[in-house]
Image (cartoon, rainbow, N blue to C red; front, side):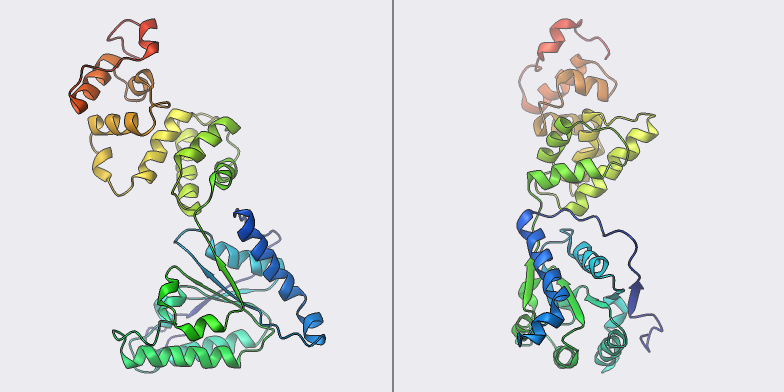
Length: 322
């Protein structure tokens, strides 16, 4: 507990009966399994005179599965997961952060566990950084000393979104390192198929959603999938509709451009340009409860040309409401 805030500096989670749901690229998944194999073989390796340190550093963009990997490690090893809280671990009082670090390591040494140092760069910044004050440099020294004093058999996992900020001495203390990356097409498709609960989603539509999710992290895809599933349930459907799903997904793909979704005309123009094979003229008319004629006029206003036509329009009277 931090003396200043009187708040806990760690959260403790006891492993359940099932491993955390983890979808990773094959290469990354193999690295996780190699680390687990090394931990499980600790006694055997030590008996053969092979120095082993059960320490893993995970680095990569936000939302790419670093915390989920730490949970998986704890689940597979059937050990409690002790996660540090950076918001309370780092104190404004002189010397308090170093004291908190020492107490956390002492706590983790009392019984077998996985000690997870999340937001690791908050503690392990490069001491050569001239912008850091002396107190923060002393924190790094305290961290390194406590890591060195920690039993080699204790499982230590650290994660950071900013590996370039870490002190070089920190890197040397982690024999196992995993870089997480944005998911590939196969991983994105699997995320869509597994994150919509018991709703029906065809493999073909999941593949299309995976293609539209390029550049999103697993966490963002999960949030989008939950949003799509919620929309389907509230609309009374047990099946994911591709057009409705893509409209929800668009808000995650272009989340920083909220103005796109505050105006109907802007949204129609964006959706048509983003995924024209999904948002046909008739699909847009149905989605926005208007006519293909009006959709065409909106699109024409966007590019200065005459209204676009869609092959399906020939089957319906011009201006008919979808």
